[in-house]
Image (cartoon, rainbow, N blue to C red; front, side):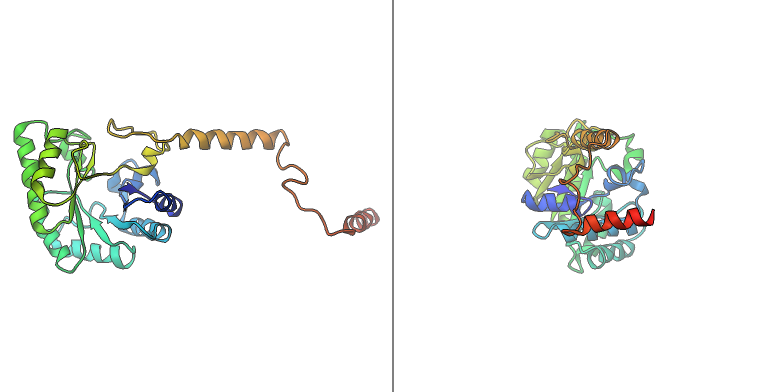
Length: 264
């Protein structure tokens, strides 16, 4: 699984043969420049979801329910989820939370919309967790995470994201839960893995989590390429005559020159 946030990133995922593409609310920070994922709206998410759906035809598509679109009631969550499917062209939705969201998951899945749960470090609730910190580092908290995973699975979630959880805890959850686990900073014992595409490509450098592996330096390459363009333009090396330009029709250039001279 990989995130995508627009048509080009979705096409990259398509060509790379990703199984699942998540339109994550991380786009708030990596694509829109917000300070927090909690600032992105449902309408903004839907805009990006539609773009991703146009670019990724093969992967299973999941849309992240942004903060404030599912917490107040199960009915509110269902309405938001229906919009994700109808307006955003997603095939499933993701929401953050454990046992407390079991009734919400049941409500959404009752109408046939698949739900991907998300426990551990839940970015939408980072402030209440003391910031972006590893979860489940003590035995008591690790057992609580197991309970959360079992609760969301029992409620009907088809899979669960485990974020920033000690590897031993994530591996134990994977053994017990009965549904696929998708790790992000949770070790190789999970059923699958997910990363934010712009992190993996080396584009977004404002925040660099320990668990993120950079597979390319697209950000540096892009900056270098644009700087080379600026240099060429300022030195009048671009565009090159004949290579990047268009000629007039045969015989017309002399006529044009004569007409210009006559009118001068």
